[in-house]
Amino acid sequence: MDGTVGLSEALHPYLAERPAASRTAAERLEEELVSFLAHRGLPIDEEAGRRVALLPASHFDPGLAWAFVADHLITHVSRPVEELGRMGRLFARALRAAAERGVMDADRAKACASAAEQAVAVLPRLDALARALRERLREGRPGRALYESDPEAYAREMQRWESQQPLAQEELEGGFVVEEVEERAVRLYHRRRPDESIELELAPAVTRLVHAGDRLDVQLGRNRSGWFLMDVWAAAAPGPALP
Image (cartoon, helix red, strand yellow):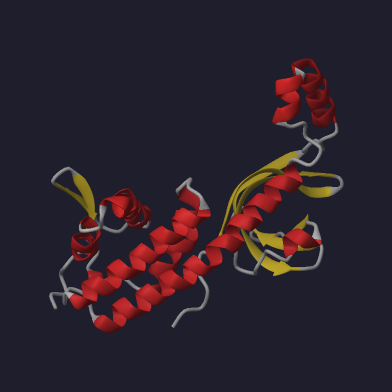
């Protein structure tokens, strides 16, 4: 095994050989993996018109494999969660294939593939959590059916709904890390408020989907009544304790 083989070089042969039905997913997988590693400041280059990750396959670890699937894919790829799951499983198979070809240590590839598959298993929960947060945010908002049937009534209802929304005296957005989950609230950490405990009230149906360590990519507002949701983008699980 050559320890200098880059990760893209190690995975590309397997992904390039995928049948037509999986070709688009394989190409997107390679692109997103490069973007994921580039975001972490790891070396990237361009070969034959495509960006490639130069990180040695021998340096790729289970934590990165997990984060790629359960953090990057779920937050950066706007596709149904079922498709994201297929991409994650394809990634795991490509890692094992790299070991079979002798360009990646077998034990390392197995550990990374296992982490990717574990991450795939949490994608439905993260997708459901983001959906539940958005639904809470949109409670009472007039829908498309009213807009199509009676635009004037829709405009009136929309104005009424907007007037009932809480006004924010201050706003804070970005990635909030879940520190604690209670039955009707979560306690969040934000890097811009390291000494402040941010409590966000949520329905039990939503808190049941939240795990400590999750990251909520949202916008919060605060007034005299406390913190409340203003916008929701995604939910991610940056990484559990992995061997």
